[in-house]
Length: 417
Image 1 (cartoon, rainbow, N blue to C red):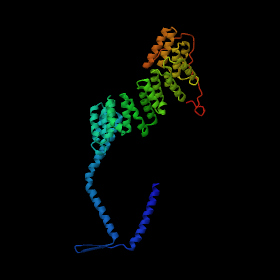
Image 2: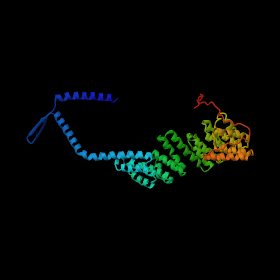
Image 3: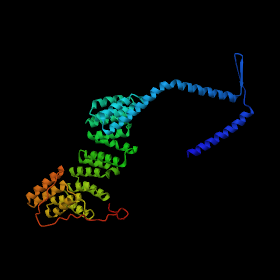
Image 4: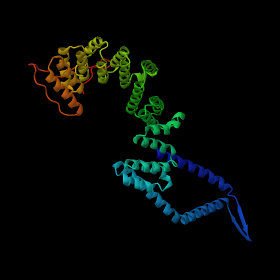
């Protein structure tokens, strides 16, 4: 594409030159210079050419005069950029002391002073020199005030001073002038200080900026809204906060889970059940299933029937099998709970399943086996190995995974991964 532009440009220049030549050839003009008795006669074209040559000669002379002085500046610029590059590489590689030294030297040149000081502050903080990092940020604030403020808030939050970090960013948050990184730091600091309402304010500008990827944005939004819901003081405020949330946020599994747990805690078990069942119809979530099974004894018979029906379509879900087993334990159906829990442990062992199986053996008066189940639950929570249970009865545990045909919304079977 550039070649064609050059060709067209040369054609236009040639056409203009041809017309200009004919125009000048008809009347080339006349210039007379009289100086101290000397007369110089020439055409206008010759005078313009002489002026251009004189201008080029003067420009070349000035460049030659300035070259020795510019050589030092160019060398200083080259050295500063090389030190900035070396410092950033050292920072990534974990050589923080070396990185801080190179970056501070690079900051002597004005064109890279701001970025170099920001990186030097980060290197100092990673090196354990928090005080020096904040002092470096004081210098960086003179070059890049907004970036320095965000980095200062991040360093304060890492040091456990989240309230100071949130207060530092609050004025810009109130005016809506925070950058993307600033909103993230404001949200994180607000979460750590329990100011969940302030953290929620950061969601909308972050969504509008589109700087965070979909997965990172969904993760941050889930954490913020879930914390906001979990922080409501009573059932009335919980219901009000839930009804005011946008529809998209009420569909996030982590938010539904936080609402269900908090609602059950305030005696709103039916509302919690409805939200979980609706969410599971929309998208299956083992976390929500576990919450559904651990909501207490209220309406447990209805929940048990509903959960058992889900096993037909999710027979290999260990969280569902554990939830059904735990509900059977609550209604003292020991013989019914044991197969569910044993199958859950065969598919994916968990501390909850071992604990519930221990409750089963307590109910069946097998205290020694129950103690081993509880020890296994504790060992699994610690990441240690578990012990196999002795054979109480001559029976075999079904550990086979059941194949279930899954279809998408169009009824087309999904291929197994």
